[in-house]
Length: 119
Image (cartoon, rainbow, N blue to C red; front, side, top):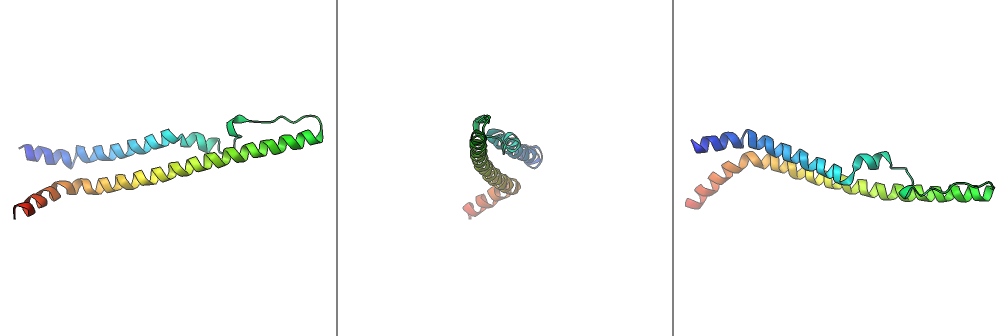
């Protein structure tokens, strides 16, 4: 009776739990890297460093170049963080897929290994 209960859990609730855990891990990666915030602020200035233009043309050009550099730095850093988040997301997705594939095979492999060990 225990073996049937275990197998019904393994191929039912347990398998769904593995899928839920994979989704939770992917959500945690998204939250840890704040991907939605990074995407919304991709072209925003770095640390909101903004130079306000003065009255003269030289001051306006200086403010423009300062702001352009600040936006470029902000874009570069956010882009590489998003790239790292994408890599982590892909790796965790692949590991989750492998786990979902291996999960139903584990009881069968356990029985096969026990039988092979006895022979």
